[in-house]
Length: 355
Image (tube, rainbow, N blue to C red; front, side, top):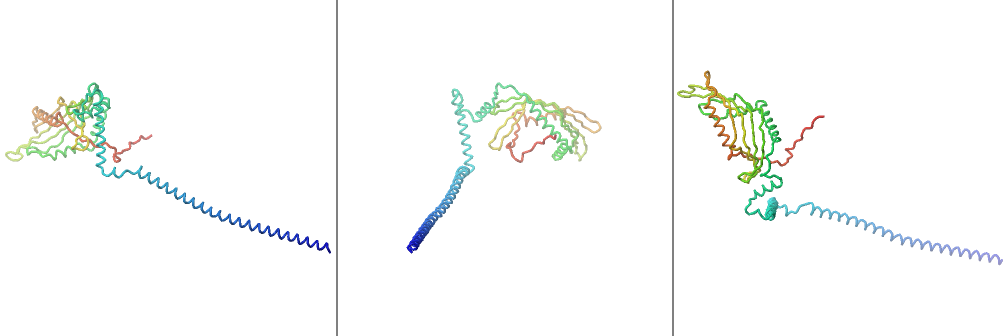
């Protein structure tokens, strides 16, 4: 009996120990769950705060980049409004720069080399000419005359093209004939018609080119020109005798004028006039020019007078006077030059040879 009681007591003790152990495990498990929940809540808050701080940084970074780009475009790409208020202010500033450069060049020329050049007594044109000669290494006093074979070839090509254009579909005949028809003729002359046109087949030769200063202080090129060719124009008309009644008598007249030789010294220079826009080309011929004509005349119907000397002399003197009053020094011809600035409408593509 005592043994049974002892056995029951041991069983109760083991049961109490198990219950105590279970309670302890349960308490420990509850404590662990409490700690995990407490630690889990701060982790969620920390992740949320981390996500929010990353979004803020991204937004601030994007705004900073946009601000930097805006500042760069404002101050480095676009111009200042005050500098582009008007075109006159910019042109005035450009003129100021050019004037300063000229003054610096004058001071440099007058300051160096013993001060032989006085800017107060030397014109701007002379200074510009001296600058051109200095930078192109051209000595007007000691430079030898130059051959112009290349220029002769270029002019020959241009003349050849003019002849081709004149002969195509008789353009030169129709042009001259229309011009003669529009002339106001006196009562004793009938209508004028063309009988002969010869545009020649030779070309002028340019040689002995030299650069000199003329009396106006400009640089001019003096070129010897020589042409031996036959340029002919023949016309016919009628002299009308209207007294005592209209068409009392009619006298046929035929004339043929040919230029067979021309040689002269050609002077070419360029200048800019403030009144005219652009640059002008001025050319004239020396007074010692040589111009030879051949005049053929025929007067009458049945009994004709051939090559009357007086008529030849009269036509020769009139043609020489016409040429001298227009192109012989001190007279000159002025040709306005077009703008040579490259433009898209003037762009052409050279045809390529076919292989």
